[in-house]
Image (cartoon, rainbow, N blue to C red; front, side, top):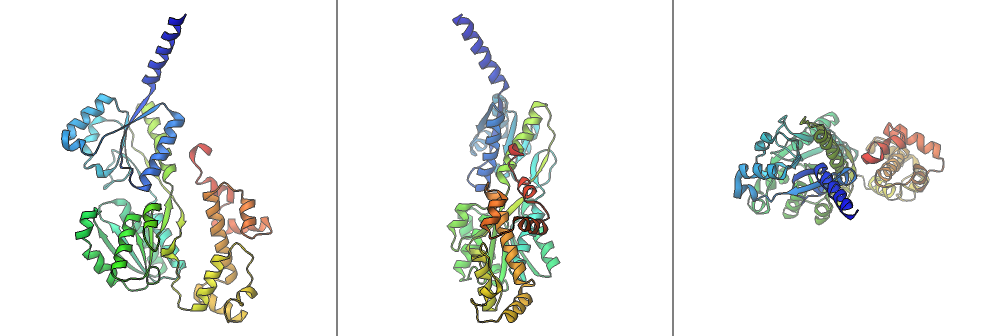
Length: 406
């Protein structure tokens, strides 16, 4: 009987190993985006395994060449590969005829799966954000090697042109620390020559940090002269800078989960059909680098700062007249002329921004969020939210829920 149980366990172990999916991960986990992407991928693997992850050091190619990598992949029986372009030229992986997913990419080759589709929207979000702060000069600092950077620049430029703003563009290579120490002169000159005040959108947080460092060297005041925004919300990079850098938060973990799900389907069905995943921008994590509005009227600036600080309370116009030495009619007239909206509408916009942020970052109910934001009439809060976002609170939140909860 004991032998029968041992044999049965052995058979189960063999079947388990035969069913195990083997994934090679050639992605550097140093960036926040990579870590969140891999977190989503691993979460899918744990829920739908058994999966085993394999790694190869970057120097492996130097020692053994492309042929050595291909041989190792075949020896391991790898079912699919997740790779980033920094692993050097990856065209040689095509011969394996297994699913390959690129985390980032330089061209639009059709043989690998990839992330795409959010770039124009990210750029448009950045431009709209700066426009609400009343900037007229818009600049983009990009990475010349990657399509995602060019896409974000294009979305930014298109939206700036719609808004009637002035657009400035500069791009460079992705610089290592040693290269950065020698190759910053052109960026230095570009930033110095930009008309001030200016809103600068960087293609990612690393490039935004370069801008922040150059501004320190050149005594360019962030955020008073230059308003700075990045992408990916890498908290280490964003908070390493002073002032801290605001950043667009993207749906990275969700993308990793979806990528795992799609790759899994290809492996199970023994197919190798490339796919694209559309990654959406969620919201802007605002920090010190975007605190200021491009407004010269000190009284209106004071009113805006007061509203942003107290938007969760019930603010009245009469209350605001106690903050600055302006009568109600004069205050309303000046505010409308400068901001293009009434004080009441501006307060509502700030409340909706807070509700949206809470819906996407917490599990609180809309009822609880609306109450903490100062709404006494929940039906009115629901109506205002839907009017301003075009979606019900439930649909707004559901749009960005993790895949397993949908």
